[in-house]
Amino acid sequence: MNTDRLIVFTQDLVRIPSLSGEESGVAARVQAEMEALGFDRVWVDANGSVVGVIEGGRPGKTVLLDAHIDTVGISPGAPWEHDPFGAAIDQGAIYGRGAADMKGALAAMVHAAAALDRATLAGRVLVSASTLEEVLEGVALHAVMDATQPDFVIIGESTDLNLSRGGRGRAEVHLTTVGRPSHSSAPHLGRNAVLDMMRVIAAVEQITLSTDPIMGPAIFALTDIISAPHPGHSVIPNICKVTYDRRLLPDERRDDVLAAITSLSALADIQLQAEIAVDAYTAFTGATLRSEKFFPAWLLPEDDAFVATALAALNAAGIAARPSAYRFCTNAAYSAGLAGVPTVGFGPATEADAHVIDERLRLDDLLAAAKGYRAIIEATLAV
Image (cartoon, rainbow, N blue to C red):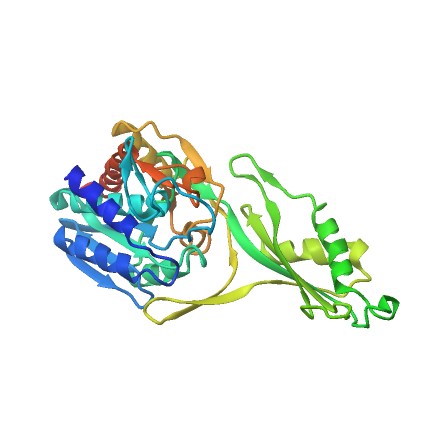
């Protein structure tokens, strides 16, 4: 494996902005790199995800490595010491938006797959550079998996070079209170939906949620609030809406998440609507991806065969990985949480390195990740 070329490729990816739905530049660069490195087949699907195939010397299982190519934006007014699209190398790390989440992992996957000795593999290796993960976890991956039918999936989200065997899910919960408008000079003639929502929020904040020993607690996090009419010129608001980000643990179901709110006896006199958000996003190809925003948690047993194989392979390669679990939501919400395909997570950087000012990826971790991906593949598809 040419480590200098891997580093340059990572820098190239970081230098190309790629907000969700605007990933075309990165997709083109990934496609070009896969073709230049000799992938047996490369294509871009309807959602803009780039998929490359390495065919082993004999028939066998299929391993899919997935990394998303979209990133979050740059918060206005938040000063960076390094240009967020400069991909500068400083004190042994690449700096820039997406370096850790997760263009470095993608670059490592592409180069690890290209460096494989095809003659020693029974099966095939796929690398997908998937789109729109930051807004719809697993939806673009769903299409890739439908087209390729993998037997195993490796998610490249950051694990600090440990091996994740599970991850929290995510739900976007919309709550709406419905009141009655009146002139604000006579508020007693109406019903203020904002005051009702204040009671709802207070009650939701007191709901007792479960905790998982690996993933930590389930979470209700209030992320926005809006009332109508807005602006409220001398009118008591009759509508108030809030959004909660609900972090999920294994086996939590959508109906249970909603019932925990709607069944609260203290809110019986409030006209309250609770639902899981449904949203649609447009890929850079023009395709529309629409999904309910309920992305389940997942967890494989520590003695699962794929987990054991991957962990042993990493350790044998000199990477002191230990079992862990993601505390955020990833594309594995589909591959493991819905499709039930054996999935592990392995990637450079830490969860805390994502979405931050001066995002960075240590070069040593980038190279170790490529080494680790290759080791897992070879252990899984060894002849």
